[in-house]
Amino acid sequence: MQANGRIPAIAKQARKGRSRLARLGETAMAAFASARGVMLWVVLCASAATTVAAAGYVYWAQGINATIAELRAGKDVVVDPLTAPPALLEARSYFFLTRDNIKDAQPLLDQAALRADERVRSRMLYNMANARLRASVEAIQQGHFDQAIPQVALAKAEYRSALRIDPRDWDAKYNLDVAMRLVRDLPRQEGELDEGNVKEPAKLWTDLPGVPKGLP
Figure 1: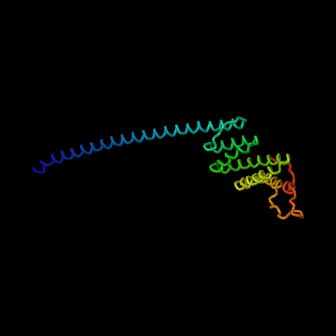
Figure 2: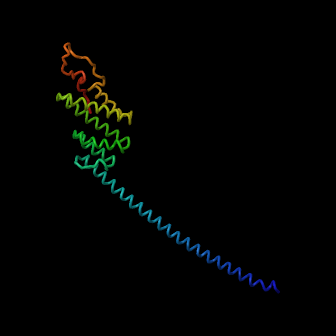
Figure 3: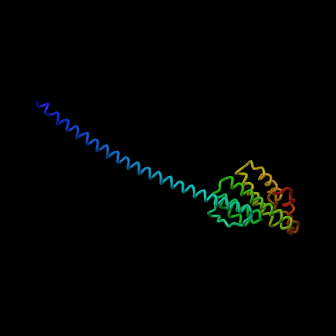
């Protein structure tokens, strides 16, 4: 009889245990549902932020492309060398160089050397060297040899820099050869004075053998 009298008590305790388990399960489910809601909210916010960022980048890129198109069309668009992206530095530099404005193109090339990729730097160096070579030829034709010599030296240095980036650039190799023929790399010989230690006029033809054809 004692055993039979204990059965209801055990069953009652079991029911209470199941009740507690049920409440714990409900609490866990509620917590999970709340956490899932928070996670979904975080995911939605992150997705929205990504979408906004992507849209902002597209808008920014479209603006850059529009400015590049204006420069290529010949419009004088002011560009800040310190903040402009490399593609815009190249476009603005090319705008100046096609107008023989080496002075204003130089800061753009300097900035590109700091943060542009190799392809952009190579093209900008090549374009700058071409502009210097054109200026040198014009100076030679006008008899301004003192102006031509340093420009040719800078052009050679820029062609060589471009070739260090891309040794297969045939155009840079060809134009470097042209520059080498404009002003020789050989050092001047000392003691080339007449008797009496009288200085002769500078024999520029030894440094400037002529203006080769087919310049850029």
